[in-house]
Length: 411
Ligand SMILES: *Cc1c(COP(=O)(O)O)cnc(C)c1O
Image (cartoon, rainbow, N blue to C red; front, side, top):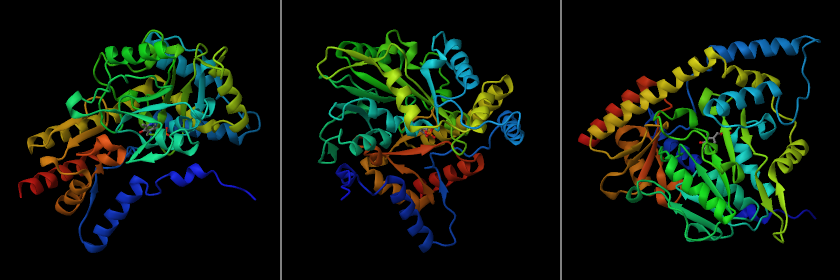
């Protein structure tokens, strides 16, 4: 008799985006003539840039000829890509990361979900709240999150990011074994300063805490002094794994490619606390067993992001989205809404007026303005009273959505 992993039964099967889709659908069925604009999408909309497209075509041609055909590649990713990453994403910022510390993957979601395999199921975890749901749910699946109590997990420390604390997560007053941080942040669109990030690294060094740092939106940072990588902070290589993705950087949500950095200096303790083991070796072993790498075409595509043309073209798409964000911030503020984020991230975190709850505002805006947002409470208890808007849409749709929101709020 095969027995199930009962932790799965604890998961909420009402996935946030499925709930939203259901409500939007109900609206469309009862209002068949109305057009609905979504400012809730967490997916890019601009096509791949020319440098990437050309590289992909060349890669396909490679596969078409016997001499240049590629079958299984290295589990860790091709050296051409890992070298380009080490040089452009790290060395260019004065950070020394070796190709052997980089693991190419099919996107950051897989590894942020899978990395927990390297540590015992009974470690305690901490997440900023609101939070990207993958971090919590992947821990629920292996039992590490504990059991649900009043809308929270018993073994999870929630670190509230609230308007009152400027969305700056406060260091816990107790020891937590593993901390997830995501900056620039999804969903709040806020960033972490160098000084604040240093506090986390120092906390981790002092408490022997492991940090899982999700830098998926790093390329959206516009402000000069905001760290792009946790390894910009001294000592971080001893405590942090960092996740990157070409999804938001270069529109690879459909192509699939990202990478995880597991520095050689990063270790964790044995059960009796007497020995330390490098996570790099363990992750390499894990990948060799459970992965056969990422497609050659995707990796050649990712490599092209680092060419001069690739860099320029990728920047254009990001500028387009950040242009949307600037327009949105201004227009929303002009109609009296309080807006956070949108400066260094493609997300705007909008306070609902009059203390309305997230879902009520979502429904009112859907019915009143025919615009879809994402209720903040869907990302965790501290998201209540906020909604998330994204700047990933088309510029014209974006403008039209703002016009509708303004008319609705004035009307
Ligand atoms: C979109 C996103 C990712 C990237 O996911 P991929 O699997 O690389 O497409 C990672 N982390 C966060 C917080 C995200 O929003």
